Length: 275
Figure (cartoon, one colour):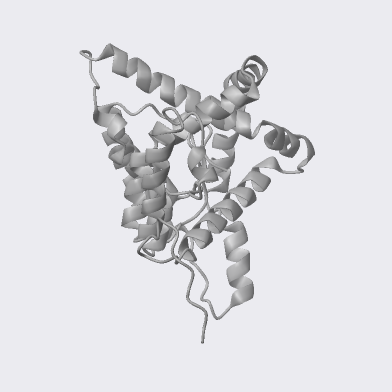
């Protein structure tokens, strides 16, 4: 489960955010000692309950839950009510298309050229045939979307995830993913282009983009989140478990994506039958 609220990245704000998250990433992994692989039972327990900051995390969860109840969930409900599903899907596709530079950078840093090629082709196809990304034509042509962010990149590099965190505004995460979020903000060209008082139009675009991203992300998990809050005995523990499972699955999918390093963009002739 990804963060539901986002920080608007002005130049100074992005730099401060990156510095803060880097400090978090360096300071917190040592809060818990990981058992050796030779003790699988202890390792499984550790992975399930590695939450040394749970009292503080629960306070932040309560704060975020209050913000969600008062602001974000009503906004997501209004968005679902007022905007037809096809339009919401189109806006989601546009937001995804705008995020291509960050995704492509991570594909390259992960050493996954086939993924980088897919990302490039998706951008070219959806920006043109898909009318600036409104329609996801690329998936129908054999270039499906995939997850890529700096947290996943660092995981592939061998950076440990560290203990679970529930940060204000960002929501469920860990030190590696928190630092990765800051790095994604830093490498996003929209963070730096056209900022400042001389570009009010661009600033309006930036605010609109991040606001719509937050509402879109929240609307897409409305039903699942409502169900968890209504039925789970401990919603905090449930969100913690779901977040970890989701991230581990994303990273495992990335790690196992070892398709040909040279993309075969065009159909190849069938092999000649054996004589």
